View 1 (cartoon, rainbow, N blue to C red):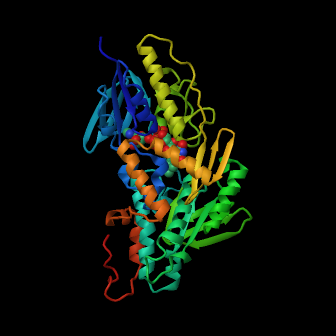
View 2 (tube, protein in one colour):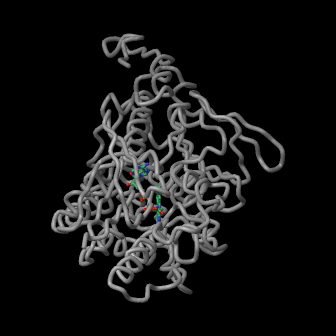
View 3 (cartoon, rainbow, N blue to C red):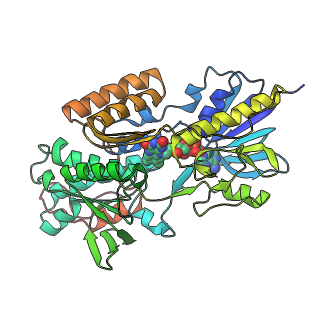
Length: 451
Ligand SMILES: Cc1cc2nc3c(=O)[nH]c(=O)nc-3n(C[C@H](O)[C@H](O)[C@H](O)COP(=O)(O)OP(=O)(O)OC[C@H]3O[C@@H](n4cnc5c(N)ncnc54)[C@H](O)[C@@H]3O)c2cc1C
């Protein structure tokens, strides 16, 4: 009898852990992903701020699964899922491929949401992909380089103003790291600018940073951010973003224009559009973030052979975190294994909350684990330990530890390379280059910045 075919969409936490959990099952696993790597998103901000290299947080999926004989990896973007014919259609360059499945696990994750203002993306990249992190790296270090070149005091102030929108873990970590860069790491690296005069603003429409961590840790995080020079502005709704800055409306009704060259968008997520196509075919509901309402066993209504896991699901208010995806992927694999072996499959997905953490500064973090609440160094140490365990691959663990030692003990950043392609990745930076008139003789002529 032919072995059951399991198709998995996505090589993130949900997809990869599902594939690995099927290693010993009597099935063939086909993992289709639009990216070649398994991306460890929680450390993206460290790529953006020059701590880690891309390879350390994004090892090739093909390599991770190379010893798993029943797994085949394809690089392609899934464009259609046909539930009636049980086929997945995917494309790469001009090639279209179709995969037939007996079981399907959809783990397409989520992208950034600009709450209906997608044009903001041009000027304030999100933080979801390696491309985003490298572009932000180019923008952060590029702004400082341009500030070093300009003679104009207002322009210098604008180039030395960094704004992070969204005070969740990603925003807090980004703001903290940019402050660390400007206040400490790069302090002696420039001659014409004083990087410690740079402003780092963290904006959020809510009235607290890191609200899910609870009031105690939220207050501790805010205090630590401010101690490190981050200006925290709450009740602040961003109403417009353009090349030269952004407009903010505060909860007291006042408005403000902030001139800033480098903006980071860390507010809001939108589930993979694959969720909507599944919902349309089954009548399942989708929430405002495009997440599909799945059954308690993570299957789609009327389709016990199709599982949706991770950031794409709306189920019992589960958060969009790595553990939901990991545990969901493993649960789907367990169900498939049990069915194939003729056993009773587990009935309901039960999420075990292992807590959450955010790094605020060098040696400073907040952590919530069960009833335990930690802040400062103990939280940072717990963060170090947990993240080292989840970094994939022994070699990556060693190099990551090395980079962390360099950064946290010596304050250096060894991964600062940016390319022109990253810098001119979006219109905003192109515009930045066009607007900018260098004035130092013998460096660059106006208009000669390449696009
Ligand atoms: C910056 C950042 C920081 C975070 N920090 C934390 C943290 O500290 N702790 C925590 O628990 N969680 C954190 N998260 C959340 C966590 O990373 C996600 O919850 C988790 O990655 C979700 O796993 P997933 O498998 O659902 O999706 P993902 O890991 O996003 O994987 C989605 C996969 O699907 C692929 N894909 C998407 N669309 C298609 C398509 N059409 N065709 C083929 N492939 C496709 C993608 O290439 C990717 O491989 C963070 C997220 C971000 C962005």
